Length: 381
Figure 1 (tube, rainbow, N blue to C red):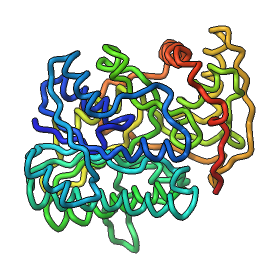
Figure 2: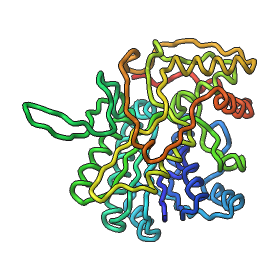
Figure 3: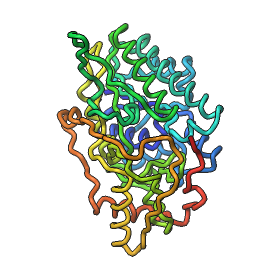
């Protein structure tokens, strides 16, 4: 297929581009370096030095012999994005082109406005570009499990059957999230569902849990191909943060009681989920929703895993609960269904001690680049 990846410079976007290219697809990436610029503004740059997107594409061609086309520009600019669609004619578009941080969206009115306008504007433009220039194109959109919040009932995969006063209907599962970032993702889903009904678009919305990891089959081939790995309080995901904290001897920062439970997945499984979705597309007029994670863990459970593995490596890892900077339930019911991607053929990579140890060893290689001042939370809401 011809696959267009929006946000192709990101933690997920770049590994996805290489993964799909390695499997024989024609791939193009689009990015405007928004995340890199936000990280510089907040003084929280990635752990590893990452070449720019042109350099990454050149390194991948050198390593693999495969070419990835590269477009530098803003998906919020419809003239630019529509031009890419007209030039490239994608069969599938993978949409990662959004500001990805809940804490960033809650810093102040400037970051909140950027999050709102960028995320909804990019999704709106994708919808129109597909409608006008690639009506058969399948949209694979990255949502988040955070859209659901922590309801006191089981979380279904996107949809729920409701019986009310003797009548039944099928509706999008209720969403009640805890940050502006997650709220924009809810709006994305609602907007996609509207245009699926109006125009018969084909859309797969992936409700992804927090991702961890560094290594994939492709990133292992050359250091220049590594993803943008963040460990800070704004852009770092939980397990990635804990690994860095363990590496430098900082107590693991458990927020509050540590009972917050979420669904997690390995970076390798993110790539597999996108590939499976692209290879088995949604039907015309279908909004297909998958809950994308492989294991459920509480914050305390992850901290204890990192402590056990780190201590086994001689690191003397300590856990220190701190005041929770976020408004969120710390003890709650959480049971989410996630069978759809398994039925498509996902073979999960589970969080074993061996996997954790390998990740920790890789982080330790870059220990001298870790800035301890970027660990503690600075954003509160």
